[in-house]
Length: 254
Ligand SMILES: C[S@@+](CC[C@H](N)C(=O)[O-])C[C@H]1O[C@@H](n2cnc3c(N)ncnc32)[C@H](O)[C@@H]1O
Image 1 (tube, rainbow, N blue to C red):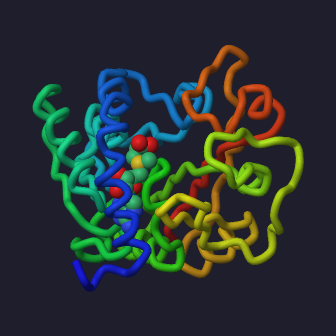
Image 2: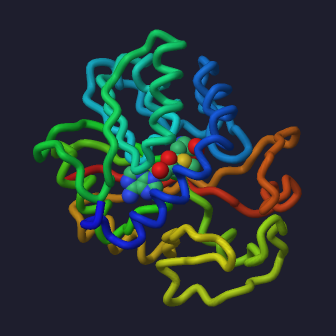
C-alpha cells in the first residue's frame, strides 16, 4: 500500500468510500443486455465502441469498477479480466458476478502496473476508469505493453471542452464559458474533492498515444439522443446536445 503513487492511494480511499453510491448503477448496467455508455446512457448502436469480433479475444478493462463493461464483453464471447484500484467496488462486482452467474477474473490493483505479461490482450477498454483516474503517462504505455500488435484500446472520458467549461463548485452545470486555460492542463484536483483526475487536450492525447506505440484510429464525440437523461449535475442535456460532453478515443497498437 505504501508503494502506491500518491494519486493512486488517494483515489483508492475515494472509491472505497464512493462504492456504495455506485452499486445501483452497477446493478442496472449489469442487467442491460445491450451496452449503453457514459453519463447519458447512449446506446452502443449509436456510438459503436465495441469491435464486432470480440468472441474468443483476450480483453482487459482498466478501472472496471462494478465491472458491467466487462460483463458486456464476456457476453460477447471475450475472455475478459477486470482490474480496479478499489476493493469496495470489486466487492459489488463480485456480488453481481454471482447474481448473474457470469465469472471472470477480477484483480485488485493499479492499472498503471498490471500483473500480466507483455502482449497478453487483444482489446483494452476503460469507461471513466483508469482513463480518468490514473496517470496517462503511466497507464497508456502500460496498456500498450499489455496489448498484442494490432490490439485495440478504447476509452471514454469527459470531453476536454466540458473540462474547460465546468464550474469548480460541486453540483453546478457547465455553461458556455471557458473557465480555465487549456494549455498545461493535466492533473486536476477539484476544490473540496479528495480525488485526483487527469484531463488532457486532444493534442496531448495524440502525442502520448503515438509515443506509446499506438495509432489513433478515431475520436468519437458523443451526442446524446434528444430524450436522454443523466443523474449527474455537472452537465445538462441542453449543453450536451450542443457540444460534446464525452469523447471516445480508439487507438490501435502498432
Ligand atoms: C467511475 S468508475 C469506472 C467504472 C464504470 N465504468 C463506471 O463508470 O462506473 C471509476 C473506477 O476507476 C477505478 N480506478 C481509479 N484509479 C484506478 C487505477 N489507478 N487503477 C485501476 N482502477 C482505478 C476506481 O477504483 C473506480 O472503481
